[in-house]
Figure 1 (cartoon, rainbow, N blue to C red):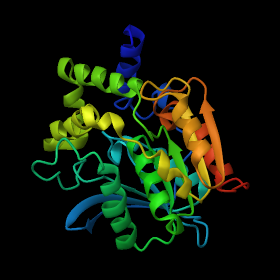
Figure 2: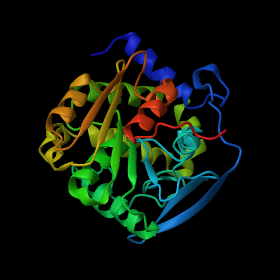
Figure 3: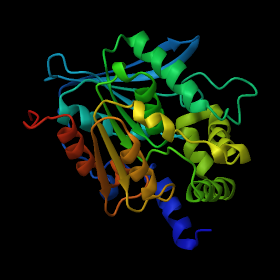
Figure 4: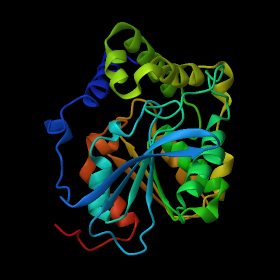
Length: 302
């Protein structure tokens, strides 16, 4: 069981999502002043999903959309300014969405918490696939973080012809003791601190359900046997696998396993001085790696 250092790392991560945008730990990079940002809702399988589209003024002609998938507790706002940074640097349109039960999207159905053991399949096959169709996206680039990265990998494995590339941050493809221990510590912090109040700024009335959908699902005894390793060989698109060397929710074995089993070209990136959220801890490195992964060599216009 992790000791006090582990607990302090989680606490820092929680607080970091609430820091001002100009805080030193979230030092912003230049964002092009001219870009179109549109908030809208898309209906998928009868469920309303909150979305945001970011289009830089100098968008590349015919550039595939980068579709961003958030973590277990994530929302559009909790990505902070990173989607705009990515759009500015790549000159690709970016779409960010909130999964069912998160933020301003429709809530989970009654009785759907804890989530089913195969909930990643549902998120991939029903909601992500449906959203891509609803928005008319042609072979998007999937950028996922944590649970969102796992869903991105699932989709790339199940619909390999529908994806241009995948950028994965802190994905899980099997359950580790460190993951369950981290979630257990997070549950204690949620119960003993004002973390819920902070999350309510993003999830409103469904905050408790969002948290339970994460904690109760991953701590189910039957969930310990979940893994998607046998599906990785079906991924044929270029894959960038990013993880921090100080990720409190997963070990390097996640990265090594993904790279060893994927069926297409793969690039591994283990980032030093980085925890579970590389796009917060080392955003410039993540953007640079993304540019390289997408074959973008010329700098974005100022």
